Length: 121
Image (cartoon, rainbow, N blue to C red; front, side, top):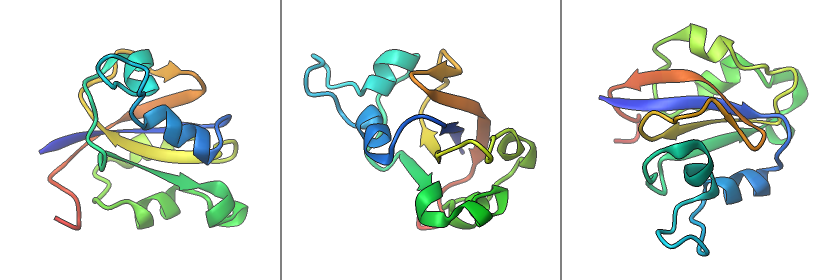
């Protein structure tokens, strides 16, 4: 079983969000800005994925589109229902231990899901 955390940003562009999650070469341990800010263990490179409102389209950027593209079965609808799809630019999931914060640098966490694995495994 794995724990993934669901979140969204209303402020960051796709490039900014990926930089937030990617390794920070200036950090002595290579931790991402996300890991430094929110406080969690290092993430694997495939441990996150983001979905873009501009790519998907305003009219269908909603819970159903998140469930369609997520590489796992959503086990708790109430977590996804906490995403403010009306204002979110990107919706994402990350696989990491429990973040010590719920919001950092324009990134908001709405909850976590326990999954048995990813569809591609």
